[in-house]
Length: 195
Image (cartoon, rainbow, N blue to C red; front, side, top):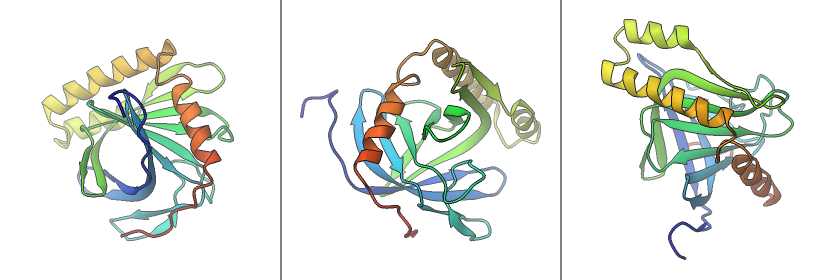
């Protein structure tokens, strides 16, 4: 298939989000496609999640306070200091959240990144995008958990992504929503096995 076009994939990867100084979480996703924006990973409703610090296994809520979670689509960019999550239309407020993080790395079937605390939230009803968790970001910087070069990259990335999202630029407007809807139509089973 020519470069820049979708290539169907069907394998499962595990997303590992690391938090400094300690803590991490692991959850599964189907690799559903690749395009000019990056790799698209779908986590169906009812999939499982593990907090690796305490080993707790629960429904993968991906930030939602209710189980059995909701379906989400992640976008891992080809390059960049972020990972985006597109929310199911049943989620009442957010349509897109973006974790500002170290560049995600895929090793075998595990995609890992370190959370740099800043997040961008895009409001479903207004389209407004806001940068949140500034206090956590500053505390992590002051505590030495985010080095200066990472802090600079995180700040620049957060400002850039928020601007793109506010202007409805792809993939932050409808691209992710279309991808999520198409993945839900595939009828993929929840992923309950964790390594």
